[in-house]
Figure 1 (cartoon, helix red, strand yellow):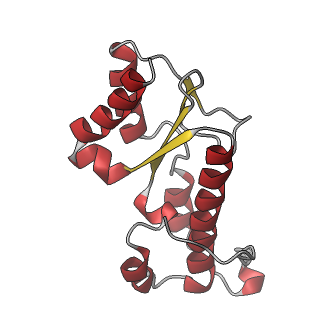
Figure 2 (cartoon, helix red, strand yellow):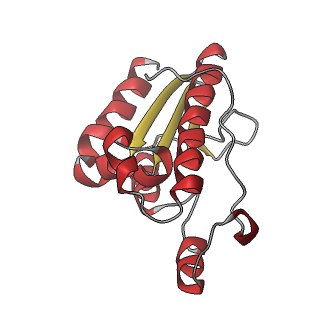
Length: 155
């Protein structure tokens, strides 16, 4: 896991006064992006539930509000979007052409927060599994198998 510098990344405010501009169409599109109950997350949840693996979802009392939590087995599962959580960041950050002064620190702060969340959960005794949305879409069985194998091992 990548180590981050200890200081908190400051994300500039997204406002016209700060020089950040957006169109009404872009704003409408961005408002439709979900933070929970995404299609890949729902797919994973439905199959696990149908196989009898009961979980709690979006537990606010745990750091990072994990998508799935198996309290007894001390497992947390996150399904991360590639853009928001910095998939292949070294290469992909150069592709941000609109408002990079906002988006680059925003995504880097998200990555830093993910690392802090993982660390806090591990210190609490939890195992953390993070899947990229594309992993669930392209190699669903492998992701499902990782969760099930862990849960079966902890029975």
